[in-house]
Image 1 (cartoon, rainbow, N blue to C red):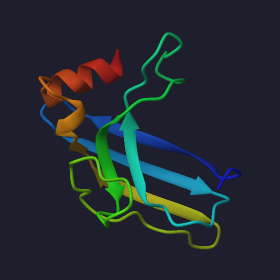
Image 2 (image 1 turned 180 degrees about the vertical axis):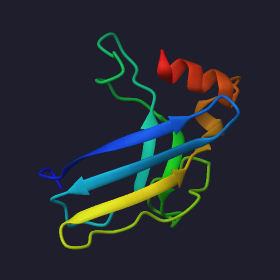
Image 3 (image 1 turned 30 degrees about the horizontal axis):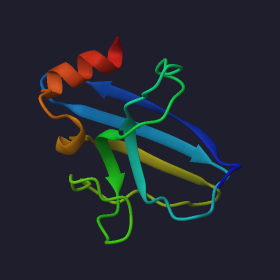
Image 4 (image 1 turned 60 degrees about the vertical axis):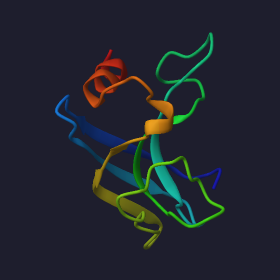
Length: 112
C-alpha cells in the first residue's frame, strides 16, 4: 500500500510498559505487523534509516510472515471504511534484536 498514510502515538515506560495507538488511512492490503525498528547506518537519525524490529506490537504469528522470535500480543485491526485504527497495542521486546538490553535501556535509547 504505497499510498497509505497515518500516524502512531506511543507511551513507552522504563518499567516495561509499551502501548501504541495507530490510525492509518488509504490502504487495502492485510496489515501483518507493527513494530518499532532500530534505525542503523550513517544517516540514521530516528526518523530515517532501516534496521531490525526491537519492539513488536500487533501482528500475525502465521508461518511465512514476519517472525522475529517474539510473538505478537494480538492481530492488527484491519481496514474498515478506508481506515485502520489499532488502539492501545501492547508492546513486546524482541529478544533476538535486544541482546544485552533491558526494556528500560531500549526505551531510553528510543527517546534520546
